[in-house]
Image 1: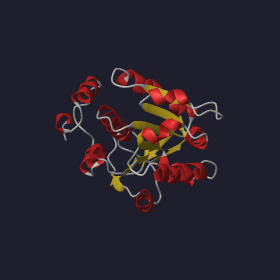
Image 2 (image 1 turned 90 degrees about the vertical axis):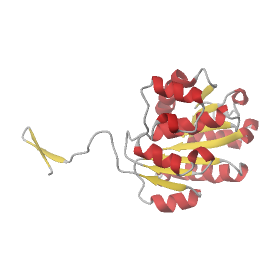
Image 3 (image 1 turned 30 degrees about the horizontal axis):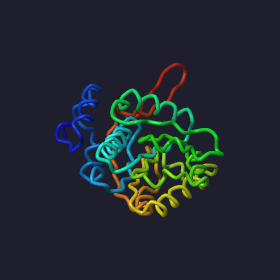
Image 4 (image 1 turned 180 degrees about the horizontal axis):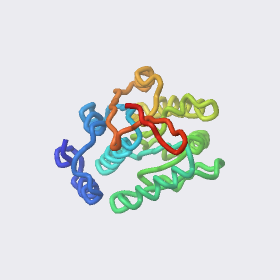
Amino acid sequence: MKLNEVQIPSEIKEILSKEGINELRPAQEKAIKAGVLEGENILVCTPTASGKTLIAEMIGAKNIISGKGKIIYIVPLVALANEKHKEFKRKYSKLFKIALSVGDFDSSDSYLIDYDFIICTAEKLDSLIRHHAPWLKYVATVIIDEIHLLNDVSRGPTLEILITVMKQILEKVQLIGLSATIGNPLELATWLNAKLVQDEWRPVPLKKGVYYQGEIEFKS
């Protein structure tokens, strides 16, 4: 699928074209055909570097520009939050306001009412909910990066509660789950009430081999 065939605002297409993106990867095309741009919940389970983040970018930017509401992008680590914030600001700061919210667990961060795309950790979002952040009611889309961490002993319970609460307080919220490794994707998609997008395409072929005495013998 060519980028010019995708039903997103021309401003987004212009930005992506400048990034050298003129054709969608298989997972991105599958997500669009599954209805992600029409508001469907989507669980994307594809290999690393297969283009999952771009799916989130397109739906987030489209929803903001069309006036649907705010976007929350949940990442597991502060370092990753900083990386995404820097990347998204470089690409989209002329279209909408992007905020990073990772510290101070004793605040509702009321200033975020003025921002459109909010990047945070699960722990920070949990704090914002418990402090009854008034701007949460304006959230239209929640993107959960590395959603397989639901199975993590330390982070999983917080993330599961967050998703459950967001579905309750935001009845029409769109959920986008992203992961390279999910052991039970169909079960998770069912719980999210989401369409499952799976694909094995990766930009570089994955080879397995054994290193021994300075040489690598690859499996044929």
